[in-house]
Image 1 (cartoon, one colour):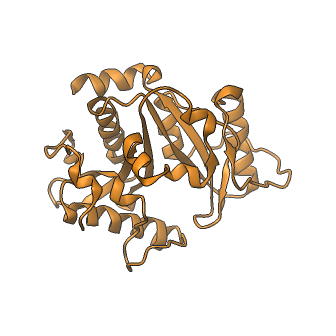
Image 2 (cartoon, one colour):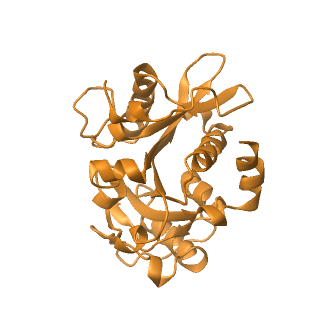
Length: 256
């Protein structure tokens, strides 16, 4: 698989090891393939997402060839058990867009000065979701942010729709009250979400990925996009590197 990302300076050594896990950037076609197959198992087999990949058992689209693929590996068994893809602004420019632009109008965000990196297609193997795998991914993201001199992280954090409208409304009410971006940083979803005037519930748990973004200091830049293929509501998030939560900077970035 000859890809534009092979020209990038990839970190071949693990960015971090802890508790039997390591996080690193995929540096071979075989490692990228493992990431794509894990994504298929999680998104298609578990979630029932309607993927447009042309290869059975693989979640791949036109953005993947321009991305770095971050992976968490079980050191003992060698299996890739977590992954996310990272699309730098300079590579999105070659492609013509970020993935998020297929869901949102991003004019206000992309007018900000500085380097962007989009985080997407994040998933964890079912057997590792109660452990440190997601934290390891954040570790890798934070370090790549520094290594590539990124100013802003952008991406979509999904809210599952199979838990009902009340759950979604509860999450959105919480986000509007606590993590909503100012008007100058608002995005517009290309397909809006209709929750049919559902009543919010109390004490709902945030989806782990969204919770992780908020811990990084993310703001949510407006109303979500309805992703029918994945049966989720996607909230667009923005993280200013200078606003990363202090414990993440101290724990992750300062170790680079």
